[in-house]
Image (cartoon, rainbow, N blue to C red):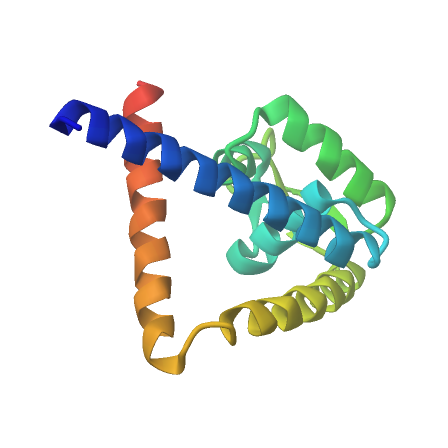
Length: 154
């Protein structure tokens, strides 16, 4: 097998592993999150707002790698459930910022407990001395995907 064939085989295997992992994680997320009474997309938005505290819909869409219209639709659902509030930006009254409400924080924490426990079980499948290496590898994979994403969307 020449270098090109070997490289193509690696790309194929990499793709299969990533797709398989994403499918399993999406299924796991659905199972863990739906038990909290919200969708996976809603949970990801709650998590992002929990982490960032206050974002405009454009900022939220950027962080979620989604279109503004998609994020707006999901945020509308969360506002109706009283998990997210929309407030006028103090610096620009034309802009609305989203924040978690107290109820939204409670729902997020419930989902997070479920997810955290499943993450614990998954991580415990690795020897303790390999866990930081795994996390570092995932961080680097994430950075590589971000670089690809930024390059492809110029």
